[in-house]
Length: 373
Image 1 (cartoon, rainbow, N blue to C red):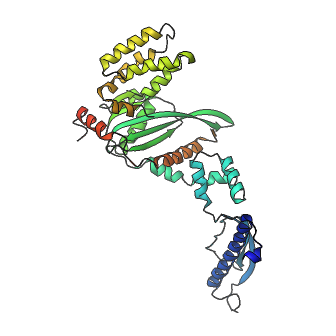
Image 2 (tube, rainbow, N blue to C red; image 1 turned 90 degrees about the vertical axis):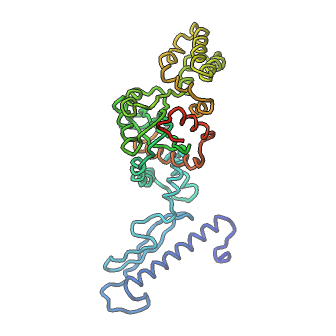
Image 3 (cartoon, rainbow, N blue to C red; image 1 turned 135 degrees about the vertical axis):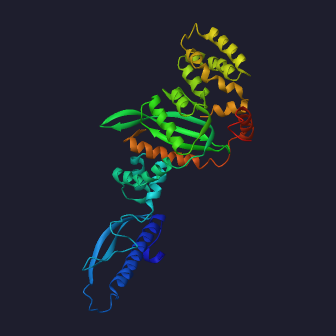
């Protein structure tokens, strides 16, 4: 082979393998045609059907793009299996495209990567068609049964730019993540594009109930409009805990850079206080210190104190748990990307979260009639 193809570089090896692959495919198709007609190419037959030359076809492979000669029959009844009719790719490129899409690459970046590596172009439409194949999987995943009890659920919103009718708009993607009784993280659902309201959130929570969730001990979120009311309606026993990370971030928006470090340090004394009484005292001290300079900064702490205070019932192990937390061509594209990114991320979720045994023990004491030891 080295002599026949005059191989001197890695590129020569790839070209040789491509040529050998094309020849092998052609031979396999010839064998398939023999079986289809019932006689070989060198034999005579009285059959009404017979070979009718070849049709050239361009296919993509892991060695690049090349042409193959596909044998034809007069009655056009031959259905090759090694490379099927209308099949233009034999490289399992679908899996590669989906993998790149899952890692956040745009359709243009994927197309350029395929061109660089395999030497053939893949249009944005082709890439979109490939990734559309996962839509039934998304629908199945979104309706799968869930556990009956989730000690803790987090809801967070992430905003993305999406193109619609030649206009770039912002859409919110809501990620609902639960921690099950074994302490393992699990993304329960992804919601894209709806406006926040109590009716909308009631629909999301009722969907979780329809999939088997009957109790949530603590639901942690940012100040999503209407969520508090929806929780009261769907899961009246659930405690709503405002996410401390979001509280801190939203507060620091009002603070100048020169004061941000000291302000954040003072905020920390509030949510790390040993109990609610101490936290109230620290809030008043911080307010007295900073309100003359930033009148609106701490208003949300006072307004939302009822959904901040549940955290003070627990130890620092639970509090640490509470602190964890491009332009798409369309809403469907965003959903596909989120779905694939979710599965890429959850591959690493193989162990319970840190200190789950201690956290679960506290939850069992706090909610003895709802979470069994």
